[in-house]
Image (tube, rainbow, N blue to C red; front, side, top):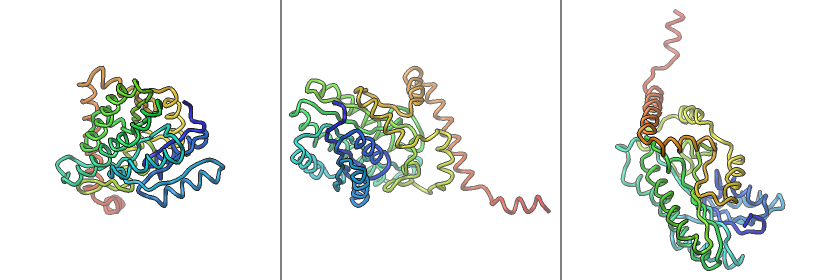
Length: 293
């Protein structure tokens, strides 16, 4: 389809990956609808796009509300006559070891990351089927393809998104509807330290320490990320993995799941040790003073 003069609905469009995708799509001539719980931020983002002579609008949406999602899809279709792309992007993360989760932690992650994506499909897929064309891009994560510790609810939700996307890609092909799983690696957005709605189960490590650990995974600038993603969307890739080097980790997971588990277990142990040192290490000042004495 390309992107010029298309209509694109993006959830979580007010910030992070959603905002970056909105800007990249608007630059390519699309009209982007930025849907988000943070309505004022979505409006500001849309206004910024319009100031550059491009097309954008904002809408309030909590993806946990199936009726609201369906109503928004109907409104976009009524106004523009079609919905060409859905970037089912809104998501949250709750970190921490599984034993620290409360029931509410599981509910929040699954409600946004799984039900929110499913509600988007329910709202937009019938419209695209009736059109005989469209593309749904469900934002999962490399956490939907790989093992990891300290984020059980997040991994569970993102694996579910990948599974949903696989099934829908097979079904949608008969009706001209494309479906892709977007699996970002580390991207330099607020979700690295929790984001607007994320949190940490149990005592939260310092943001400085968390960012220090993330830096080892070379977070990508979101604008660069969005440009690379759209290349793969245009090619109708079933799995969109950016940064590209994460494909090597996914290959290892498929070729040798046991080795992949061993490697990610070591990474988890290292991160736990680092975060524990951050919490337990005595202040450096008295040690320095003793050394000087």
